[in-house]
Image (cartoon, rainbow, N blue to C red; front, side, top):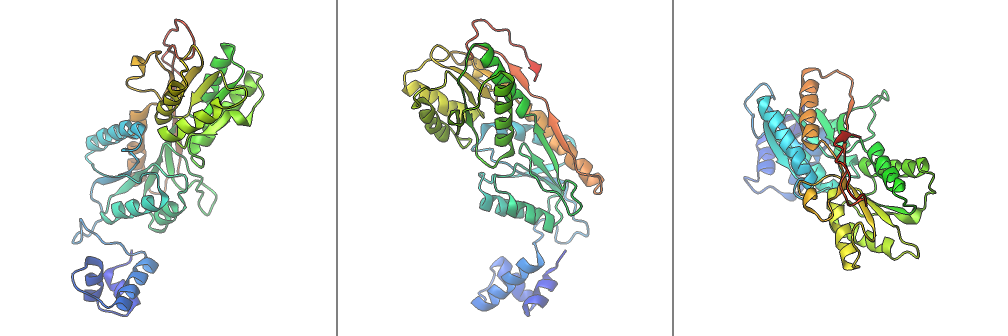
Length: 347
C-alpha cells in the first residue's frame, strides 16, 4: 500500500507538503496541490484515520454501505448486520450511498480510509467505479441483495454475494393470479440495471409462460424502485386501452406508489384490481385488504453477509461464492382470495 512518502516522491514535494494538502492545515500553491492530488490518485494512497501508528490494519470494524434511509427494506437488513457484527465483536460504520454511483464511490472510499477490515455493500445499478476501487485496493467485500457480474482475470467470481431468491417467487405470484382467472397481469418493476429488477422480470415472464399467457411488453413498466416512480408507472398501465386486472409490485416502496395511484382512480383492491407485492411490510397485515406478499428474510440476509465476510477475512484465498436465501409466500386477501390460509412456507 502506498505511503505518504511515496506520494511526496511522486509529486516532487516534501512529506510535510503532502500532509498540508491532505489535511488542509496550510495554504499550498494550486499547481503543487494538484500535483499532490494527482499522485494520490495514481498511487491509490488513502489516509489511515483510525490507526496511523499501528502495524496491523485490523480494526475489528466493518463498513456497511446501503441506502437504508431511502429504502425501508435495507433498514431491516441493517439490523441483521449490526446484530451479527456485534456478536462477533466487530463495530459497524454505516454510510448511505443513496443509490447514486458517484456518491457510492465516495462513501466506500471514506469507509476504506477509516481502515474497516471489510465491507458489505448493496451496489447501485452502475457499480463500475465501485468495482474498480474495491479491486484496486483489494478490499474484502460482500455484495448484499443485488448481484454484480464481476469475474476476475481467471473468469471466476471476484466477490462474495448474499441475496434472496428473486425469480421463482415472482413466477409464483404470476401463476397464483392466473389461477384466479387473471389474463392481463402487470408488473411494476424496479430500477433498470439492478440484478433484483432483472431477476424479478425473469420470474414474471416465466410465470406467464407457465400459465400459458402471452407476454405483453405494455404490461411491464418500471417504477425505479421508488414510490413516486411506481405511481407514475401505474398511471401508464391504467391508461392502456385494456388495462391489467392484476398487478405485481417489485418492492415495498413501489407498493405504496401503486396503492396511491389506484386510490386516485377510485379503484378498489381486489374488487377492481388484484394486487400482490414483492417485499412484505411489518404493517401489511393492517391494510384493507391485507396484502398478499413475498417476504424476504431481510435480517437473515444481513447476518449471513457478516458471516460470509468474516470467512473471507479468515480465508482470503477461498473462492468467492453467492449465497441465496429462500423467500416466503404470505397469502392474504389483496390477490382476490376470499379467505386464504396464510401459508408461511418458503417459496
